[in-house]
Image (cartoon, rainbow, N blue to C red):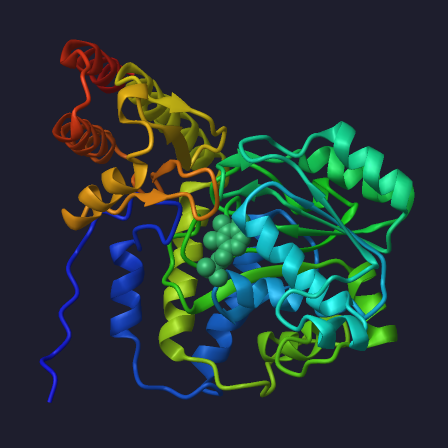
Length: 405
Ligand SMILES: *Cc1c(COP(=O)(O)O)cnc(C)c1O
């Protein structure tokens, strides 16, 4: 027999998963043993759907959760894409790169897929590579969408691989202007940035995840939202999936024939624990308010970046929940060693997952002076251990300013 599994508590100071709110955990383990058609579970799912529409600022009826993680929601989001359909996908890091791979798998013809099943070269998909550390800007978006006039266009809102925010307004505008259906990976922006879906009519489908900005548990629910335009395309053309077909999935969330109905019907077995956790995460998010939370992320990211710069690091990101940086010159090339040293002390920072190797430090659900000070202290101590030199007084000044703000 193996011993009982013990997993330590760490500071999740990476790009995600974030630190699950203790109130969410409590709801998870306190939920009763009820099946997926119990009236209170179904009521909880309906309430989640209503709260999610508020959190995301949308009147899209097809707004609900897909069981799983971010990729599960993203898979449902691209379910309507068919072989041979024209797609333009903007890639500026690891995650949009995987999104583009998923789109190539969907849009590849039989021949294209079977000639390279794990990495098909789909002729109908134009992948626009934007270099690491840069945002996808309005000019690039307009150029490729106007040139290719695709049926679908794709972009990540926040690219967590490089910590960059992409121009969602320009993306939505270009999609509208050229009749493209916009698909957005909002895994890292929901619950972090201050935005409303209904302000971006060019985007017809959005997908996020449970364990980043909304502080829920991984493998509960990935929020998704589809406009009627997307649902019409799906109604007409179908999708080669049962479980991730948004029209079919929506039924369990009591959305049938494009309308909210009284009671959900079976699609697959949902978990009372997952529903209870998701429900609480959304309640907490709504109570705090998206704008308030976004303002806190902005404030703390500024402090954190300033402290890292004072230690000699070069910050290359512009996301508010994540700082991506190069170590000071004398430690350049030792990023992986640095990250491993921190991680071995349960200070859970991350490297970048694709070249170049950089350090990523995140603050998901770590929005307090104490938490930010702890991150700065741990980071500084680890940097000194590796041979970093910096003036503690400068850092102290950053932190004093922080507590006075
Ligand atoms: C984290 C992330 C994903 C993947 O989400 P999982 O929850 O790991 O499946 C996809 N896209 C972006 C932008 C992300 O940040």
